[in-house]
Image (cartoon, rainbow, N blue to C red; front, side, top):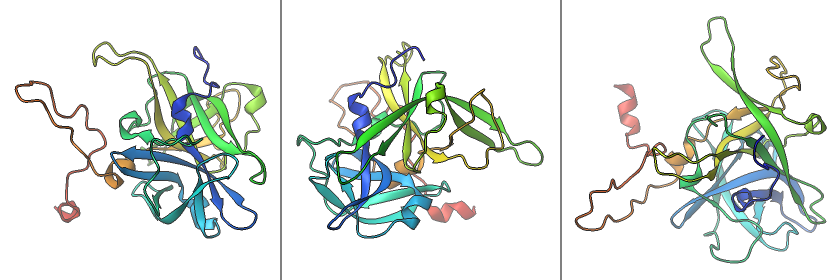
Length: 256
C-alpha cells in the first residue's frame, strides 16, 4: 500500500463508538464526527441507526467513561447515509480519545486518486475498552451494466487476514493522499466515504471479495454551515479553495 495505513494517526480519532446508553452500554457501531467551526455532526449508516435502540450517545473515550448524547438523526439525500446531530456542543480542546475531523479534510467525491486507503471502524466489548480496527483496502469502480449507468464503488481488502472483516455500517474510508504541487498541498489524510457492508457479493473486482460498498460524503456540506474565513485587506488570495462541499442553491429551484 506504500504507506502504513494501519497506523493510528490523529485523523482516525474522528471515528467514534456509537452506543446505546444505560447501566450496561451496548455498542451499536461506528460514527465519524466532522466539524466546521463550532458545529459538529456525525455520519453513519442510516440502516444501522434505524435499527438501533435509544437513547443513543457518542462515546468520547474508548472506555465509555464519558459520553455525548445524540439529539436526532436524519437520512441524507445520498441514500444509505445518516447524519447525526449531537445534543450538546462537542468539547473541543479537551483530552479525549475522539476528535472530530475538520470539514477541510473531507472529500466530496469517492476518488482516492490511487492513494493508499483503509476502512476504519470500532469493535470490541463496550463493557471493556473498545478499539479502532483498520483494514487496508483497494477501491474499485464497478459498472452495473444494462440500462443503468451507475458505477458502484467497492472496497476490497488488501490482506487475506482481513477477508472476514465484519463491517458494522459505520466504517469510514480514509485515503493517505500524496503531496499535490499544483494546489500547493502537502501530504494529508482525508475521509473519502462511508463503508456499508457489501452483502450482495455480485461483483468481485479483486482476488479477495469486496467487503464494503462506498457511499459519498457530499451530504456533509449541506448539513454543516459554511463559515468563510476573513481575507486580509489587500490580499489577492481566494477566500475559498475548491468549495466542493458547499450547497448554495434553494430547494425551490429543484423544480426549474
